[in-house]
Length: 322
Image (tube, rainbow, N blue to C red; front, side):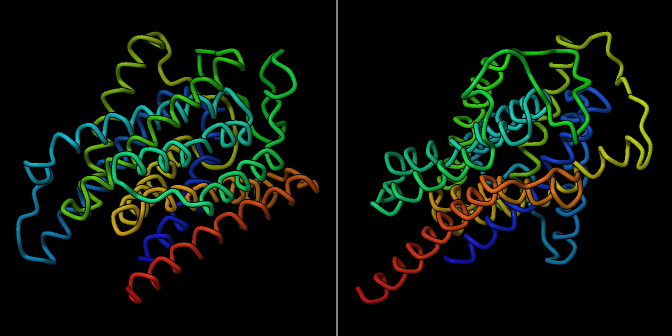
């Protein structure tokens, strides 16, 4: 249904806001602690929402999901949490636009997987939208990785990284592509599971996995880094961490629900409007100037998303006529 694409669009706005919060917070403390805080916050918020649903509906809702799809829930949680972890790390290592551009390969992986696993059609419109979106992302991000590999140059308008682990630009981009692949697998698994599992249960599973992974990362890669906090004014660190978690919860809920009631491939393309939204936030909130290439890229991405909406509505019309 078209409502699925709408929810994916809302999740795109929230994801862009979350990415910006992660970028800023990663300049205040290690990104591993940001990942842990997001997992804990989302798990708590999700648990409260699940209890509220049970009170409203006056019946028990299992937080473990149906037994016949539990293995898919675990697989989706592992893939999704690995993808989120790699994305957070790459945000701390690369300019925000570069990290978003690398992760834009997620809808391509998702559409290909949905075609082979779910039998969803790959049309000429999908190809055109994919090419249009990729061109738009290149125009917006103008990724430095395409031009030089001589170091990491975070945007001057955003705080640098306080993460103790530093990767070269090439390694960081390769990790971003690996995370995009994990995200594509996770999106496809959500579609395989279908509406039998409530979105909040997906959130509980993935954040339990995020907590476990972040604890392992802290223990192995930052055993002596006890949440270093850089000096900064304004909102406190815990406020930033809480904001990352709350916005992340809302974005995941909209994403899961949108993918449940819509096709995985088109939904994933619409989600990547967050690349354009992220730059709008950078201009309006972080004060980073928008050049003509960025404006051109944003228009290309919006055009690509519109193509997917038109295809979705056209498919519904053909279904009714048939």
